Amino acid sequence: MPSGDPIRSDYKTKAQVVEYVKKSFADDAALIKSKGDGGIHLPGIAPEKVTHSLVR
Image (cartoon, rainbow, N blue to C red; front, side):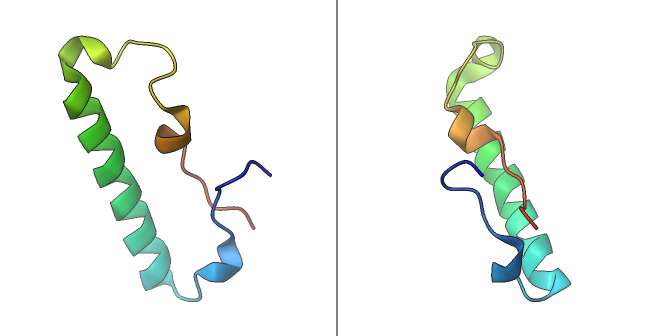
């Protein structure tokens, strides 16, 4: 498991999972917006920020 990935057991309810996912999308959108239209196509723009997943 990569360092920094959240652990599913840290999120006890569906509401906590939904909150995490919404925050992840908001963080990713902010990162993409900060890079501008052309920046979205740049390889490796902080992949640790862009790849969010819950580990069971």
